[in-house]
Length: 469
Image (cartoon, rainbow, N blue to C red; front, side, top):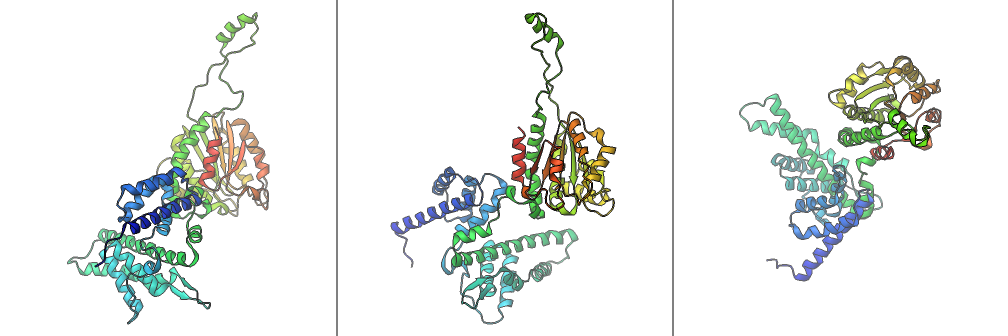
């Protein structure tokens, strides 16, 4: 029978946990999260208030004191798994029991994973994942160095066969066949468990990498920056959906800043009665004219968006921004173009941003000749057909990379727009160092706008919004 740990052992374990938590906070800061020193102090303090044997309670308590935005949670979870793993150190990161190689390892792995997924037990799924990694992920190089590969494990696990077997086993236990809806719901449940299995396999492989290369090196490689700093050209579908939620408050702030911004010298109308009364003090000479205060109003907005292939990923962000801005302005008119320009306002007035973007790309008239960007033609069409959309109350946003494929620039149109509009800004997704290289004519357009700014991620857009004040 195992004796209770001594006081010294408990103190040593507690100090090791505190050290790991402090290392975790440092890693979070290194990954771009604003984990301040006060967060580190709170993280240590919170350990005294929770059950340290409950790992999920530890995870949620630490997240509560060091994570300040929902978009940072994924980074926190990845680093938490590295710094405070479920089975830290030694062989514990692998199988929970010796792996029996008798018989067919692939068949044994498949059955063990199938049983764990069927039961839906998180601990059983974790054990099955670690055993699968030990059986199938290990590769020994010529130099004797051992490496673990996820693709080898997933190939052995055979996810499509697992899902089919899970559905078949469930159906065998029922007296009546499943309806289409029931089958879809059941498939969603099993797919969620498979994602959990995949995550546990990743965790096990990372723990082996930690033993081989060290914790800090692995943390630097596996952790992606927060979505605010993620390049818009590299977002997947789930990240674009998350980006949409982040855009809404930013769109609200952008509308507020644009509404508040004033050009120098643009006061309200001359207040003649007050001006005359003031002039009595200077012998009838109006040295100090009085003006009526401007009445605040919701701003009007016009957007010109390049949706060509060269900025396809940025275009999706652009269309999400258009959708988020729609309800924040009294009037929003949106125009998309490739080498032809078409008004697309109607698709963003209501509905889902993804659906609006899909309809735009399918139904809008955006191609005139070859489907390569033609800013000159798009601007001339706007000047010819839609210049009346620009008034002294209108703010104009142009979104695109200014790569015009050696075609006519027609930059004078932007000059005319700037003279009529309240303000004109250009958001360019290319790094500034690439402007005016190749087909780019960024400088030709930049001289006709209030500012052309680099916007490759949400953080840069937030900086642009802050600088409007």
